[in-house]
Length: 467
Image (cartoon, rainbow, N blue to C red; front, side):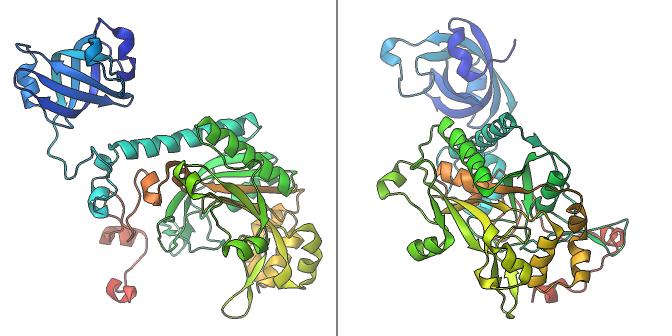
């Protein structure tokens, strides 16, 4: 017999069917045993009647058993209908139950919100935590958001292209996670903080409109809305100005979240300069909603523009504020090329904020080698350093690379806004703990002596290294 999903049962009233899923609730009333069964599509109530051949197995079953159930889909009497629940007008008269896999008692209750459960316990048993209704919803919202964004981009001539995970360590703002090379003793790959350089190289490659759902790895200090790993919808466009990139992103976000049933406070999204944002809100991330709008789950998007390009380092030099590959605003290009008024140079950076979170950030990029060279000169890089770090970019820019710009939209930050969650780990399937420990598995952990030898590595003293 072919399996039927629970949300399709009403179409089969009067028929004998097979469902497969989990026991959500079991209620033993002596002569009869009632169950709520769930699968990917929803819930249905089933009953084992007196003298049924299924009674012996029904008495044995407990919550969270994986089962296969055969039964007749019956219309409930009107007085027994439950209008407030899925499939409240039908009931499965159970003829046979097969236990596919029993379940030990769970370490915590997944029938309610699990957010108050100890973090270590939840993440050790993340596969159970993910069965809870809230976590199922969060991960499915994430999936739908990505799907709709992807479809929007395909409709607008974008090509989805994957870029490497093993790459070169380059100065992009955060510490790199590095990977030792077995074949090249003493040399290391870096995991990508973002696909920044590759997506610019794809613009040099003539694709014009690129995107990918990119995994980004950054060795940053952990906090509620930031982890070592995150996912971003990464985009780049050729032959564009700042407004055109922002309009494309705004259209994608508006189309996606409204199709998902959410309400946007203001369209088009307000635009505010970094200077005005700091003066008015004291930060470049702010929440434009009223208390009532927060209660209703309204989404308040805004763009922040005209960021300073450079900021002072502790040593008195200069470093970039966002991205060294950015282009100054047109009227400040001459200042950059001459190395003048460094602190006053503004960049074509644009950040998308929503409900108090930075949801994405991008810029128009430097596409000529002399502009990129001037940027790194301000930061104190010699020509030799520049050639060593980004010589491949300078070379590419000498072969007709078009003007281009793009953005990276943080998937987790956007899903936090859609679901109302305040912790990044609540919208990831397998997040890390606050201490950087992986869910379920036990990383980081030491390598074996054999692995260290193969990688040409030795550990001096891990205890002293921590100090």
